[in-house]
Image (cartoon, rainbow, N blue to C red; front, side):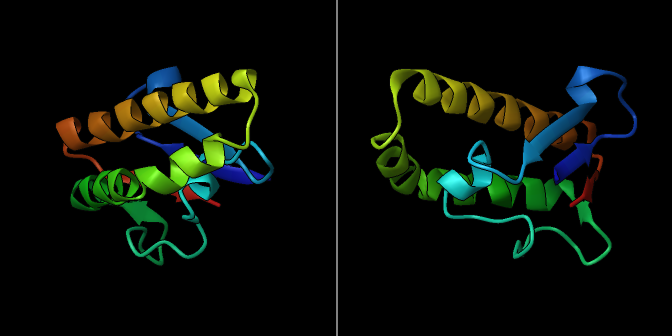
Length: 105
């Protein structure tokens, strides 16, 4: 199980992001959740405006992310930093396209 996020106007890897509900979950490393996320509507939409807000929230919680990374091995740290980079690019693509993200979780 996990969160599947889609930008419908794009094809392939750029328009899709998955975050599994296990120890590899990126938002959990920021003490955030898909289930209790004020930026995602009840219909499962993340608007471009709220994508910006989510990016800001993650930036504000960078200290929590860093603290959680201090408990990880080098391979995991690299994994999560790469996943964070990809997630930011995904959100920024939706913002640039002015398109909401469909969230299934």
